[in-house]
Length: 211
Image 1 (cartoon, rainbow, N blue to C red):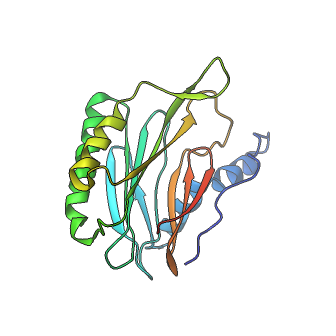
Image 2: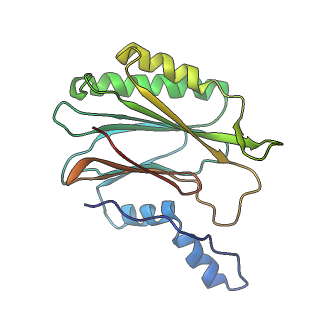
């Protein structure tokens, strides 16, 4: 299945028409994916709050994993290249509490142990942080106080030493527009499984090739 275009160029506005407002909700990326799951699509995995799930991306199998509901939570994704050339992806969504950050790191470590035999450690896995930021006086977003980075970094070093990459994307979690998407979505093209599209909170798109 090819990568779906789930994002919108312009967010809709709230109207006095209830039916239109409902339609606006239905066009949000996370709602579209939830509808596909409800319709019986087995290729999509949903990660709930305080949850961590992993999947091997295989032709004819799972191609999308996502989490929604990020208000001040941390979403951390880990993407590894498999020894069979198929990716392994881990996605987690936890609250910003200190106890949750510890659970998040432990959950990712558990999934890495479970899938370690499938991971090609000659390649560099990638860690993606989608975390809340605050509006600075200078005008852009700056990360909130958050030690999730050091906790996940320690876990990754246990498995890969320093042979991994990290990327952080901040999201605005206050004063957001209506119908603002809170989804963090990893989509793979199952015919070319090294091609990945990540949609971060706020529908920020990131395209990459794994190898």
